[in-house]
Image (cartoon, rainbow, N blue to C red; front, top):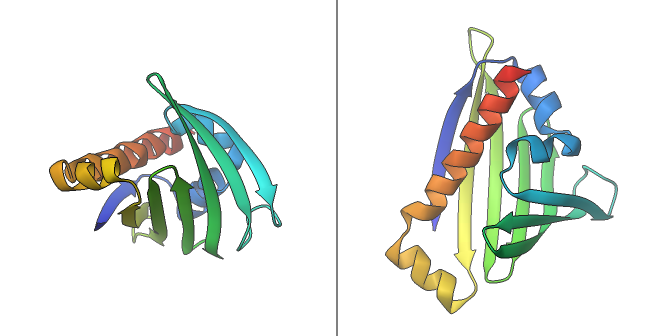
Length: 145
């Protein structure tokens, strides 16, 4: 399943990138994030891996992030893998004429478990809605800084 989400952030691209690129900020806008642990590779560079742990209701979700491309301030691509799911997010950041930032995310989800395959068929909007919620949370965080 592939889709694109976009949001306007009323901050300069430099400010947005500074906030987006700092792992210490993740818990300030990613709902349910309990921990972010660097695993391998030079932090923040292509091939680097980190573990993210989320508490979602009564469930704990562990996810591995692998950086695929880091061409900041223009683009950042990472793959996220968890039980039953593979997800690639390609983030693009463009400065608008009025000095704000247009953040566009190209998302691809590949369910690897039967449960998630069924969910993508029955409720395909659920994944897009969660992506939008995360983007809005980052926008709110960035605009308060």
